[in-house]
Amino acid sequence: MGGILAFEIWRQAPERVTHLALLDTNPHAESADRQSMRLDQIAAAASGRLRELATESLKPIYLAAAHRDDDSLLSTILDMVMDLGPDVFRSQSLALRSRKDSVPTLRTITCPTLVMCGDEDRICPPAYHELMAAEIPNAELKVIENCGHLSSMEQPEVVTHELKKLLEKI
Image (cartoon, rainbow, N blue to C red; front, top):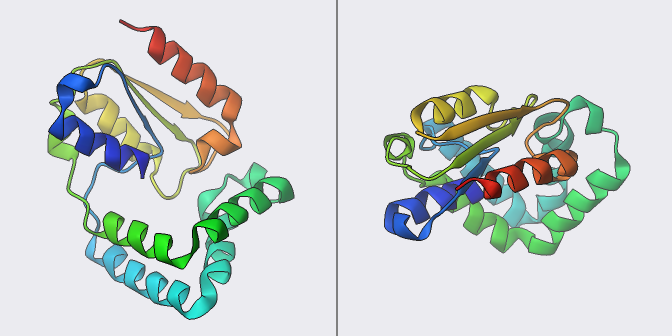
């Protein structure tokens, strides 16, 4: 959700943004199919099935193949989901469901920008990031190998290195 928030911050106060990092994000508005799926997920979470929902989608969708059996990583992610709980899940899902299309915003971004994703990101695939990098002036694209949607957790060293490089740019 960070990229979606970053787009909105840029729209409202671009003069306050000196550098932008768009990691594992989607510039498109939510499709009708995804909007419907989110309502089903909200209902499942509200009925006490948040753990089941997170577990079912965690491995196959969010993580690269190399990380799907990393019990420590899976446990950390599941703990985060459960700590936030169904009310936060609902709020986040509704925000994602009604987000603006940020594709028209891309050409307006003028600060140094890092566009980064995992090569196995199935939630926000590399094609979305290629589009963003092509449309944003001063953007650099970085696709991380052996990485899914949770790049900062799956490949933290690579993400940190690339963010430091971005912040060095004037």
